[in-house]
Image 1 (cartoon, helix red, strand yellow):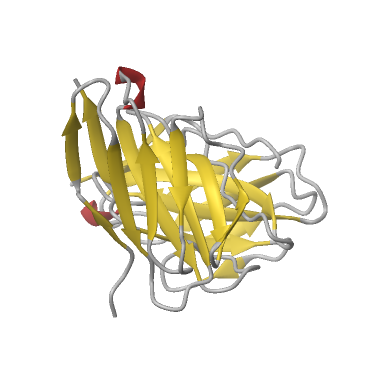
Image 2 (tube, rainbow over the protein chains, first blue to last red):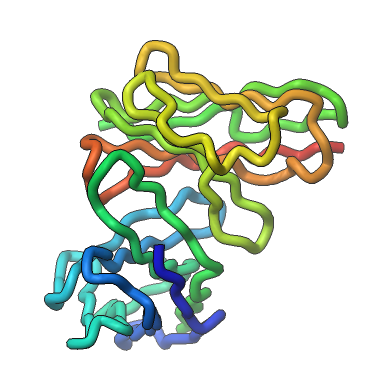
Length: 112
Length: 114
């Protein structure tokens, strides 16, 4: 699976949009981009995934550049409950092995 | 509905003791994963089951680690002769389909070896 690079930490004011970047310059054509987050003392939680088109769900939006070498997770109106470590993961979907390879993620702190 | 549950939530073991960590996946989920998370790090893959078959155990750090899922539902991760470096949070995740996108994680078991 391709390696990802994320900033170690970010701050965001409550109510503002949080934009979390991720570089994955060695991504292959059959690899998807996933985002998970981990709130303190909980297991990781799936947020969103995409292949090459931008995606949006009730939690977030995912913007993938045209060359697919980077992406941005957008939390449109961050709340204190969004304080967590956010992991960007790329992996092939298919076959029998679908493990997740986590990096160290971005620690997002949402403040009043 | 119930999510993935793990027990115990906390375990303290003396060095050299054996421990058993339990994972109850979401009912009907075919795939089950174990991950190990050291303090300040992201989770690292240990092993993967599809139903009762252990298809990938490449992440198990030593032969002291053993996992099973005999009936394709509940899984147990066993660590023999625990060492201090085994101290970590052990996370279990399950997914509905073999080729699904989303894994559902349990809250983890925090193991402390003294």
